[in-house]
Image 1 (cartoon, rainbow, N blue to C red):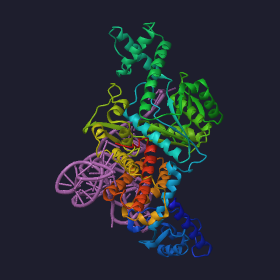
Image 2 (image 1 turned 180 degrees about the vertical axis):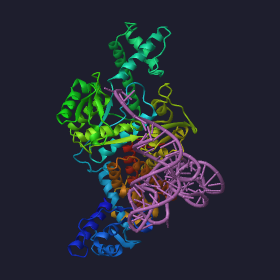
Image 3 (image 1 turned 30 degrees about the vertical axis):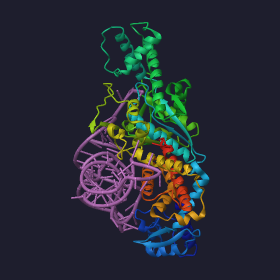
Image 4 (image 1 turned 60 degrees about the horizontal axis):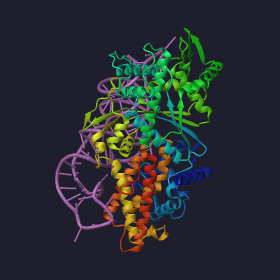
Length: 555
RNA sequence: GCGCCUGUAGCUCAGUGGACAGAGCAACGGACUUCUAAUCCGUCGGUCGCAGGUUCGAAUCCUGCCAGGCGCGCCA
């Protein structure tokens, strides 16, 4: 039931008819809004079209509004009132009994109600987390994981063909540094006193890795290791760390379709191929022995090195090749989720994407940092010193659902304060339980109904007249508007809109539950109400699924 | 110094150029003989950082300041 769309179409038809008859003159139909006003006195939907049309049509907005209303041809029984308000808004009031129609639709579509074909035929890749395999995931990665996964779910629900990808930076200095760190920890384990390198990875996990190495492979063969030996150690460590990362993500309910290795880019010669392509187009030049990309011609502040004078390619070169590879696979849209500390990197990558003529098809979402608190006090987190709270610890302490929900109640670009104590509390302060409780509560109602021999009823037109309480109409409206909300969230790549909607829906349900009995002596009324709350339960489950949070049958 | 993000109720945060700025928490006062009280009902709480500008209309767009965070390498 896409009411917003229906109203928009009805308006457009009326405006175009008025144009044809000469009542309104304008060149192009200006952009206009159809939205749910904040105040119910202003109707269920309102449009500003008369205001946006005023200057072109050279008529006062209120007169334009009148003309439009005259020509409205809406489906029978849908509108109870249309009025002009304020400077020229047109307010639409939907007939109360009309809302009931959402219930047969939910009944017919079941768990698919809320899905759409918005993105049909569109291939989208969501690349997220992509943490370097040099240490365990911390809470900031958790935020990216929750967001990326929910976004992928959201895009999938709206009909996009979605691929979830994790990019593994397993090339370059960091693997060498990782190997060096492991090497020193190995020597320590064998009783030597060593001076641990300053740029090494100092976390305790390196000691665990060293023990694992000794147990599996024994002492390293050489005390004067060559670079290749250290690289081998680094690859060993990265492999184990990556295994741990995969497990942490699984425990967090996050799965990837593909783990793409940077080393693979080189094995397949993709970096050289992207160089060839860009050279052929004249986007690269040599200077001071290095190879540069003309990033400044595409909006970046300066040109960027892709191959250093020592012959090594840069991380940026890998990324250009990687993104070229992405687009060559036919993705219409590629979404990258990055930690906000990488924001300075966006313009150069966008420059490359534009140069390769894929402009507009890469969307980077910057995920702001998470400050961890315990009872309002900041928890110190330094990567260098190796003291940080891992995602594994957070999940163990507060649970996957609470953590994911909290991550999804903020806009990505807003800083997030994550208080471990609050997240653990099973209270109002923790909206995840509020929403889950609504679902569990309904499950309980249906258990109770079943115990009394009441099967979940199918919809019946006679229910329309029985669901007229303000609480019931409120719920029906939310259910009816849900599919368009999901689409809007998908279009804007903002899963958090869903989080807020679910909290509101749960609130409406709890309030309704408290004031009115669903199961009563009046069989007909009972059936109508059960039919309604069955719809609520379906939507709660649908929304929670997208967020990656359980919809429990009992709590 | 330059760039990006943020600034909304005591706290944590929503808010699509629209109408009188919202929620949860906290505080205060109420509601369990009921289909789950992890719930409900009510009260209190605002110079939307500041100053200009654009617009019929600005928390929202533009400019300048102020404050916090993060970046600014032939590192990744």
